[in-house]
Image (cartoon, rainbow, N blue to C red; front, top):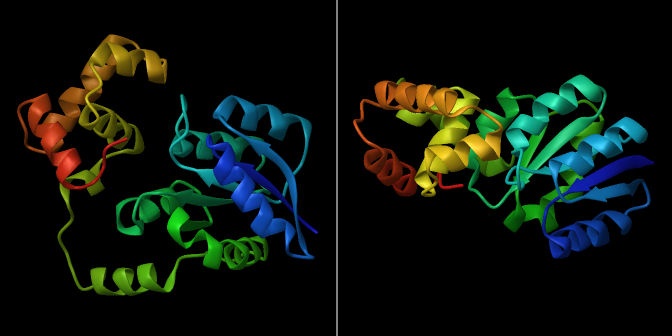
Length: 209
């Protein structure tokens, strides 16, 4: 039996995933969590084989939680699920340690297949994303946000959603000076001069948190 932990802050989404998983004879639901703190508590007290992880969680993001999971439960495989299109986040989450990525829209068709694939040591990406990656091999250029670190990318998304430096500082448990340092790096790397430009870019490229 593949023991699965469902992580999403929406109870209806968790219920939908549970229904899909429990229809299978070889996969079970070990637990459900709605935020990062619940996940960390669960991982310290119980074991699971696969974590189905929403990238957009309240408080600590899924990207940050991936790092914690690698340290606390290195044997557990992580399948990231998100409302965001694959071309925006899939590569970043795979590089951060996830074993697969699916969109919530495709979950009904791909969730079970993806869980089995990563549990047996593989990586799961959809045929659509595989085609996009093949096409990207022929390209040499990268969009500015693809060159950012995970933390810089996270702060770009928060600025894009209209968050002030003080709000970001509180959300990420960072000092205001640290957030300002990341903001300065963002402006330099992306060749921009203001938060307004960062916000416009994030909205244009569908990166808003």
